[in-house]
Image (cartoon, rainbow over all chains, first blue to last red):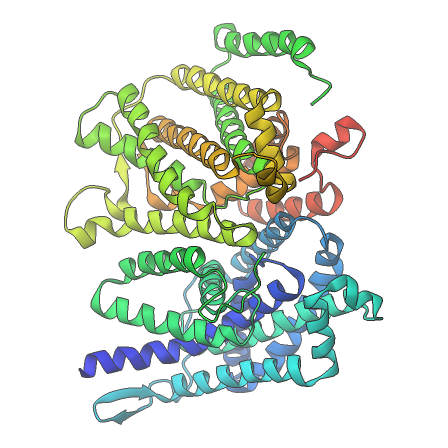
Length: 289
Length: 314
């Protein structure tokens, strides 16, 4: 029973991080229809920003979040303005390939610069946890989980409570109509992708606290993001929270009771079955073509 | 492709084919023969992807599922069941057909990004099965991450002719699509599936047929490569880079055309070989830059340049 509850809690905490990693993916897809294959690399870059600030300057990992936010925002803005805006309106395969090109460039440059070594962050409080009736709750996991929730709530408030958020949602609903009403949609696209990259980068900074950091960690996170947004509903940002939690708990239970390798097979089967039976996500609010 | 109508194109094609077939007799061997064989393999792979995805507009992001399955089926049949290569290869193709029918039957009902993600997931799931199957089931079958070693292969001319024949077959099938009702049906699905369905095109049946045919052929190509290299591991034969390469090659040349995949695969294989030899460490970075630049500058593929007009719609 303790084992079951423990793996449930582990899955829950993991799910929060997954949700934070996937929210930006859902946003970019919902507004621009971009399936961003370099999404996981933003997670990797965020993780490395935190890692280097911690190792070289001795910053606390939590203090590095604003820096990651700013750096990844600029990168996202740059990529959208330079390349992605040019293929707006082109068939979706263009965005798969273009972003796969980003993935190759970013991940192989990172590999050249930082080598393939596995790295971990070890702040002084890394091993601390508290014990609740035999269940272990690490402080750093709790903190990253809370921050992941804050991140998603922040994105939700940005989208639903600000002028810019309204413009973004209008563009997502109908780009042509939004344009006719005086919204500069290319500016909106740029801001959307930048926000997507920025929150993904911050999620990466959170990932760095509990995961191993290495240049090739991106692609698995892209795949995770796929699963999460499909579960929550592609393009439906609030759904990612539930998608992340479902996936986290599912993976954690499968790893506890089966093997880690088989848990991946089951994850992909879950993804396939969801896509076929309920492509709109568990709430059915995802974008359907 | 209007410039190469069957009447004018066939003699050109035959001369080209005979010239390629004569190369080993004229003393081309070693590295050059191997490079050409590799080129035929990629032209065939891109061609298979093209006559499914290029014509129907359903972007398959998991063709490696069948490449890997074919490679593993051939290896397992040859090692564990002592079958001859020819029968193992034929069986591999036959194994891929029901598998593709199963995956296609489920996924071809969903469109766009959903189809792409679903096929990608299917390929990754199969890769995990070959990676973890042995450990989970407790038997010695796929060899896990150590992979499988096949019996020694015949000389490289054998593979040269085999893959040359395969390439001609794939080009032939695509050419056939341009002329038949089947091909027009597939194109109609790409333009507007709903309209096609309403006009009486049995869209689902056609999609399934193209998907199963393409997948079985890709499975056979996987089997050939396995026997050619004599050593396979899941991370290589199910590598997502193979999928991407098929897609990029086809897109580079021009999707939904007969000669697009030939040109794209030819170009990228040669460029890749050159870059891979010259810049061992920066190869992937350069490939990434090439992809980005090509998409931004030539979104309709190289074929559009040759025609001097807008290429076929993608």
